[in-house]
Length: 408
Length: 217
Image 1 (tube, rainbow over the protein chains, first blue to last red):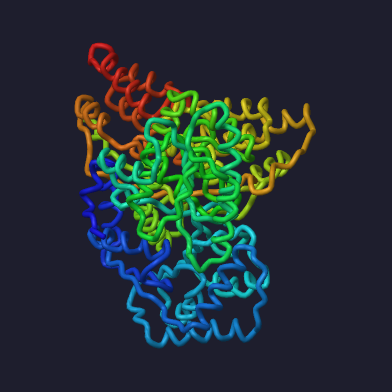
Image 2: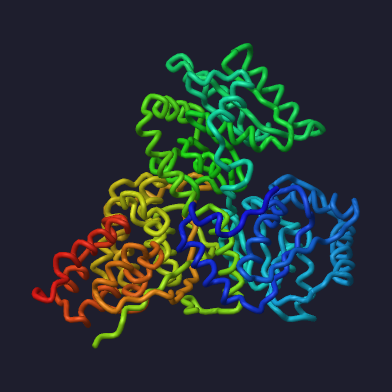
């Protein structure tokens, strides 16, 4: 992956945005910030830190990144934490909790804590806050997980650590909880230069899309998501079948998933069964590293759906809007932050509702175009990596300034 | 000689209060008690995040009341609160309370919203930064106005008037000190809540061209 220079973003976001980043960064001069998470590769947190740390360094902010170490048992426990925080019932023993704390404390013995500000990502390293009693300094906890329906015994266990931080940071308003510490909202972002979002030549788009047997001369309706019941791919097929008698469109359901994930395979089977023999339904089970292919499919689409029943933030919506596509999406998780109904996209609540709006957008290309233009503008102003970097810098400054209005 | 105009910019870090409302009565209760910064955030965030759109809906309360609770009449009443005529955030809060109370006295239905679509109260921490950008006279001001970011515009139009307690926006205030009384009066009477911020920028530039001559001070 090529690392972009800060100045590369100027033609996209404007000189003033990059200049303001530089002004804010100056206020962090002399401060060292350490990010800590649990994996250096794979997953959204590692992906964003990989892109963000070099940009912060270019701004003159001494940002670093460290990873805690753990064995298989530790990561099994934290995987169960992840599921339980998403509302799946999991039984934890006191031994599990004790081992989790123990591994964190072992990491404390070997990690370098030479910094002014610590940004700790997700539950895995949350116990590191115990070092605050020794070091002082500033500490914030960054939660990337959907916290709308967490298992309460786990939440109580984690709260004893979370509430020792100065700030908790969540990705969407619905994830916030009653906590005794301030909570900031920092939404995730997309990088316009990543393979998934960069501009592609028309010939490359056409070649990729036609390679999948998709007809570029007819409308293409696409949902990009892994094959998961919560993304409602079977519901998307039903939407298509309600629309197809009126508009000769094609449906593309494209996404990845682990082949050793039995539920993912079952969902894929269900989708294939629902699709039947319709040659205009294209079910594409894509391998990892299909970012350019996903980019091309989105760019070739007439309308993009994200009919999720439950969602973390739903960055596929931001990706589609960035490409000026009209999007119809479920009003769940972080999606309402990205779409204001009938301004920058459509929010829907049912199969019938989605079909109704889909017909409308396919019949009214001018209206669709307006939604796409507004949607792209909204993403440009609020969900690009430059905004994300700015919010992190403002968070760091918030740790050092307690007032509501701060003159820097 | 008057002082040059120094441009500032501002950025907000949104804060989550962990407070939510699922019906109109509970929304009213929370509007009474949340911090000033929360009222400010919910009545201005939309303008900053959606300033490129036709400026509707102008505030989060109106959007939620209309689109989530489906109370169109109250949604319209809340959207049409004339914030431009109010002097501070407490006045905005009181006007919101009165609008919702008036509606509730006529219609006592207290339907809850669908789970997951509650109104989430937020607030913000505001960072104001001086820019290396100033104007000594109207010509320089007009040149700068064409290129300043929307956040700079936002700071001088909304922040100083509603949260820092000035009775007019920064631009009108400076025009006044230069002696351009008519220009100051007209810029002061612009309603920034019913136009996009870029539209407002154009309006001010037009007013400078029209009333920025010494002869019509």
